[in-house]
Image (cartoon, rainbow, N blue to C red; front, side, top):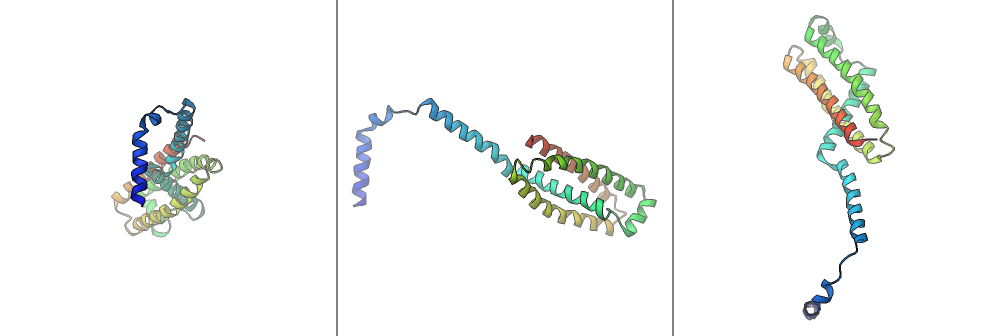
Length: 174
């Protein structure tokens, strides 16, 4: 019985196609559709992979800034090595500089949390993941202080963090 109904509907549409074709939406309908599409595209960037990566970096930056303020970055033998090893000293100076820069920019990003609540949830969730990864990097440095590649990678990581925070600020425009 369902097949007959489909056949009747199909034949009705076929027989009355001309009556359907002359109807077209008004310009107001198209304007409303375009506005809705425009609104969706504004919120989609929060869910993009690039934004997620930037949010993760922001979380790491916040975490590292908190670590610097409370416990300090280097302890024990690493801090002692900093007195002797100029590369460790350079790392400490770079960490302090980038932590200050990133911390200031994070304060600007936090102002956007009220306007965009999704941003706060994503940033904080991603920051927790990044904090775990960053702690692993610190362990590697403590275990292998003489490795120049680790030190250079950490300094480059700080440069990248600053670039990412700048990119997030450029995207959110709060």
